[in-house]
Image (cartoon, rainbow, N blue to C red; front, side, top):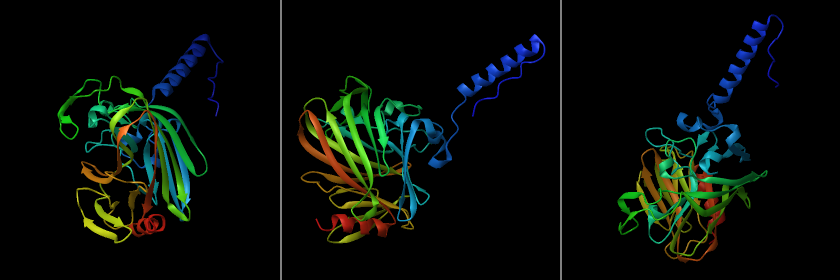
Length: 332
């Protein structure tokens, strides 16, 4: 709608005053904060930095209910919201309600056993915490009727030469970040597609990590899901044994698929990796304000170039997730 123009009839003083008021209104409109979008069902600190202008959302009907994936430009194109049957599946803030770019549903990697000291991360760095814009750079994004995709120059988790209080990597021997910039051309390309074969309640999650230089001991995390704390109940799934109840377990690492669910079993999520091998594993970790489920590939020497992974993220009730796993992974 075209803004109404001030009425300019009358004395020069009235005309000048009208113009002044119009200019003030435009100035206030320009600098006013974005109004939180209720669609996201997220805490105020998070929804307050999201708007239709800096998000891309894909809606899809899944088994008769609405599912929606939202990427955010200021979060490096990572997934800041996934809702299904009215439930938010993604956590974006810490226990104090502060925006945290280490959460979301996103991807990351580290090399040379340096852990956080050389750790390109899709959504942003830890030094971005609480800011409305992360250091990760969204290169491009797009969507079709069934899929949404993005390309991101990932931000390193730590500032160049930043000191790590506990030490990085398994041995904790590395004390400082070794990256020389906040971004260094470690580009992530992802494509997330609703449905696979006859199963609707699954996301096919395809990622390509572009590594600009040869590295040793590459560790890739194509899917890291930070779920809200309501997803406190944990189950394990294998093709042979089906679902096994672990209750409120806090940490787990192994080759069984991890299902995180609400206490009433009505909402659940799991990631399945068809090509896990060797030292690859699924991980569970509970941190303040979030339950974290992820898949980890450890591939050793990592040549320069593209490294591709294809995973499946199931959602719905515990029974629906288990049925989807059985349909797509049970035959393996």
